[in-house]
Length: 212
Ligand code: B1M
Image 1 (cartoon, rainbow, N blue to C red):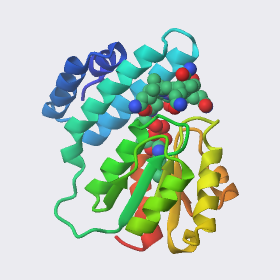
Image 2 (cartoon, protein in one colour):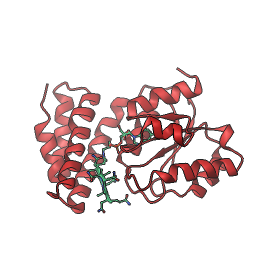
Image 3 (cartoon, helix red, strand yellow):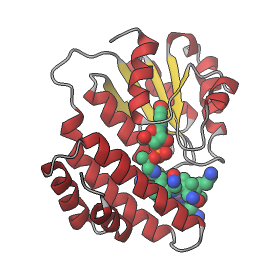
C-alpha cells in the first residue's frame, strides 16, 4: 500500500500532470479508488485548508490544488460506477448562493451517479429561486445542497423556505452537506437528511427513497 506522499505533494504544488500520474500509479499498484480518495485526495485538501488558515498559502495556491484534485477525481470516477442500473431516483444538486466550492459537491454527484442516481447539477453559487425553478421543471426526488462556508450555510434555509413557498417542499426530500454543516444544523433547518461525506450521501439517499 502506498503512503500517497508523492500524490499529496503533487496536489499541494498544484502540479496537475504529476497528480494525475500519481493517481493512476496508485491505482496500478493495487490501491482502491476509495483509499486514494480518502487517504490521498481528501486528506491532502484538508492539509491545504490548514496551510491556508495558517497563512502559509493563499487563494491562488488553494485554487491550483483544487484544480489538481478535480483532475484526479476524473481518473477515479470509472472505479465508482456500479454498472448498468435503472435510475434509483433523480437528484437536483448545487452549491448554495454565494459559495464557489464545488469539489465536495462534484464528488457527491459522482458517487451518486455511480450508484445509479440521475444527477442534475446546477453548479455553484445557486440562488434559491434557481433551485425552485429547476425543481419545478425536472421534478427531482431529492434536492441536494452543499455549503463550505459558515457564511453561506443560511442560504440552505433560504432555499428550503423558497421550496416551501413554491408549494413543492413536501414533494421532495432535501439533503444537505459540506464541511461546516452538521446533523444538528440539518435538523434546525428541517432538511430531511445530512451526510458527512460522499459515501454516506449515497447510503442516505437510498434510505430516503427506500431503494437498495
Ligand atoms: Co475555500 N475555504 N475559500 N476555497 N477552501 C475553506 C472551506 C476553508 C475551511 C479554508 C480554511 O480557512 N481553513 C474556509 C472556510 C471557513 C469557514 O467559513 N468555515 C475557506 C475560505 C475562507 C475561502 C474564501 C473566503 C477565501 C478568500 O477568498 N479569502 C473563498 C470563498 C470563495 C466563495 O466560495 N465565495 C475560498 C475560495 C476557495 C477556492 C476557490 C480557492 C477553492 C475552491 C475551489 C473549488 O471548489 N473548485 C477553495 C478550497 C479548495 C478550500 C479547501 C482548502 C478545500 C475544500 C475542498 O474541496 N475539500 C477548504 C478547506 C477544507 O475544507 N479543509 C476551504 C475537499 C472536499 C472533498 O471536501 O468539500 O468538505 P468537502 O466535501 C465533502 C463533505 O463535506 C461532503 O462530501 C464531500 C466528499 O466527501 N459534502 C456533502 C459536501 N457537499 C455535500 C452535499 C451533500 C452531502 C455531503 O448532500 C447534498
